[in-house]
Image 1 (tube, helix red, strand yellow):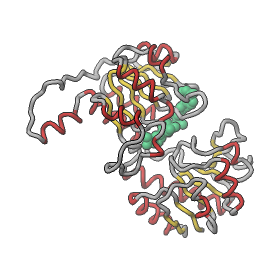
Image 2 (tube, protein in one colour):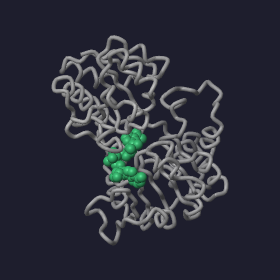
Image 3 (tube, helix red, strand yellow):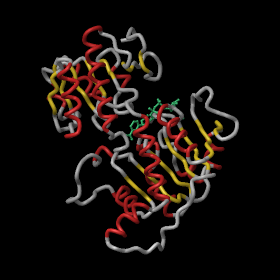
Image 4 (spheres, protein in one colour):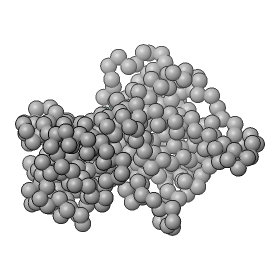
Length: 344
Ligand code: NAI
């Protein structure tokens, strides 16, 4: 089986080579992202393997279909970059629904602690032998209220971590999890109640029509003054201009962003010798109370190994039985996982 692997980074190869070799899959690694201009590189391959910033829109799907490519294997959980409706009946879309919720949840807490205890400032100061503590005052997490939007795999691990710090949790989910609300330290509330009462808000829901710009000018105005916003989910959950305005007006006390709406133009690449074209991103990064990481929350050894293993198992299962429990299906409803593979 031959798979064209797009948007390859050096850290992808060891685990994909390991599991691919074990199962007779030959990956051809392309550094370029998949899009309308590069899709012809998939000619002669059985499938393509793509990541979060590859483009699988209608034009790409049509061309893959013409080329006889039958499978898109996402090596990630989110699939907002795939036109699922258009894919239906043309190409099978497999994904890795979970690889390490701990990786993302722990990174979220790492960003929060870095931000509120000014670790990013201290690191730079002490390297310059500046041992002054001016401007370094933080605040305790103990007793604070964190609002968690999306209580799936990652959101629930993040809640566990926050509870370890003695925080109270207000949760919101379109489909609340059974048994999570204990009526005391963890409570499901309306979105407005969460906005009004949270000291910190963390986003762990997928990017959908419902959640696009869930953090916008209106919702930020409902928040406590000085709220800390954490987004390790998807960039377009936050309207970046509204966030910038909120930071300038001091309504937002700090922001930790692992994702950004226009990240596909920049993230994962080295732009250090270039002029930053995106004024909003440049302005956000220039703020002392904003921390940006470039979609690295997933990047642990455990997660990389799990991603490769599940992707290879998805491909092997699909090509040997035409079924895969991790196939996404538009027809099953809202692009949920297709459990029986009969919908295609
Ligand atoms: P999950 O599917 O286990 O949980 C998502 C939760 O969001 C579910 O409980 C679902 O009911 C809820 N949800 C759906 N629509 C909603 C809405 N309109 N409002 C509120 N909640 C809603 O997904 P998981 O594994 O916890 O991942 C969450 C997100 O994290 C992914 O969608 C992805 O965008 C992001 N992610 C980011 C990574 C990174 O490296 N920064 C890595 C992996 C995932």
